[in-house]
Length: 379
Ligand SMILES: Cc1cc2nc3c(=O)[nH]c(=O)nc-3n(C[C@H](O)[C@H](O)[C@H](O)COP(=O)(O)OP(=O)(O)OC[C@H]3O[C@@H](n4cnc5c(N)ncnc54)[C@H](O)[C@@H]3O)c2cc1C
Image 1: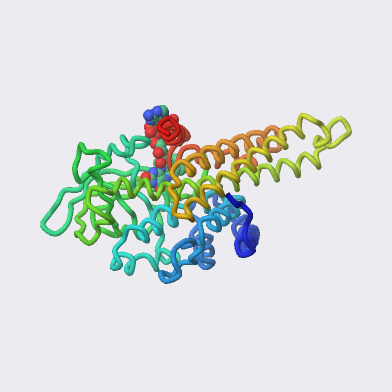
Image 2 (image 1 turned 90 degrees about the horizontal axis):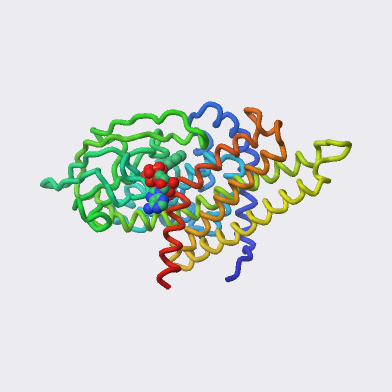
C-alpha cells in the first residue's frame, strides 16, 4: 500500500497544523482547567470545515478523504485532545453515519447543519449495564401508531452539553441483541430528555459529557437506517471513529515527544544536558519509533476506509497500537521531565491524563483485541 501523502493532503495537513497551533493550542490549558465545553474553538474549527471533513461537498462538507481527516485530527489533538475527540464524535459517529444511512429528507434536515458545525452531533450507545457489551441494550423502543416510544438511560454521551442532535440506539426486539437494535435521530430538544452532567473526569475535560434519561416519543421518520439493524450501523460508525481516535492518540503522543525533547535538551544534570545520556535517548527513540509505527497503521486503516474496503480489523489495530504507543509516550515524557512534568498545570501532566481515555472510549483495548483475534483465528 502506498502511504505517501499527496500534495493536496500535505497542504491540508499544514493548514490545520497552523490553525491548531495558532488557535486551539492557546485555549487547551483553560479548557482542561475549567472543564467547560470549548464552543468557541469547536466553532472556529467548524469554519474551517472540520465538522464535516469527509462529508460530500453537495451536503456542505469538505468532501475530503479519510487520510486527510486523520491528519487533521492528529494535528488538532497535538494541541487539544478534548477538541479532537469532540470533532471525532460529530464527524465519524454522527455526520458520516447520517450520510451513510440517512434518507434524503433526514440528510436535508441535519447533514448540512452538522457539516457546517451549526449543529453538533452526539452518539448515545453506552448504558450503565451496556459498555463493551454494547449489544446488551436496555433502552427500549416500543412501536406506537406513528413512531416509537423510547425509554432508557445512556451514559457518557460526549458533546451532549451542546449537541443539537443525537443518534440514539434502543432495543426494538429485546433479546435479539445485535439483530434487534434500531438507531434513531433524536433532536436534543425533544421533550422527555433529562440531562445530567457527569462529574469531573481525569482527562479530556471539557468534552460536554452527560448522562441522558429518555422517555420520549419519536416519529417513524426518525428511524435511521433499517429497523432492527441499528447495531450494525453503530459498528460501521465506530470503524471510522476508531481511526479518528487512533489519530487523536498520535497527536497526544507527538505532543509528549516534543515536550520531552525540548526539556531533555535544556535540562542539565551532572553538568550536561540530560539528552546526552543514553538512558534518555533510548526512551526518546522508543517513543518516536512506536508513534511512527502506529501512524503507519492509522494511515493504512484510513486508506482502507477510503478504498471502500472493509476496515474493521485495520481500524482496531490502529486504535490499539496508537493509544498504547501514546500512553507509553506520555508516561516516558513524564519520566524525562520528572518533577517538572509531575507538577499540576504542566503540559505533560495534561497529556498524561488525556491519553488514558484513548484506550477506553469507542471500544477498550480489550475490545480491539477481541476484534483482531476474532479475525486472525478464523482466517
Ligand atoms: C471520556 C469518555 C467519553 C465517552 N463518550 C461516549 C459517547 O459519546 N457515547 C457512548 O455511547 N459512549 C461513550 N463512552 C463510553 C465508552 O464507550 C465505554 O466506557 C467503553 O465502551 C467501555 O465500557 P465500560 O466503561 O462500561 O466498561 P466495561 O464494558 O464494563 O469494561 C470493564 C473492563 O472489562 C473489560 N472487558 C469487558 N468485556 C470483556 C471481555 N469480553 N473480555 C475481556 N475484557 C472485557 C473492558 O475492556 C474493561 O477493561 C465514553 C467514555 C469515556 C470515558
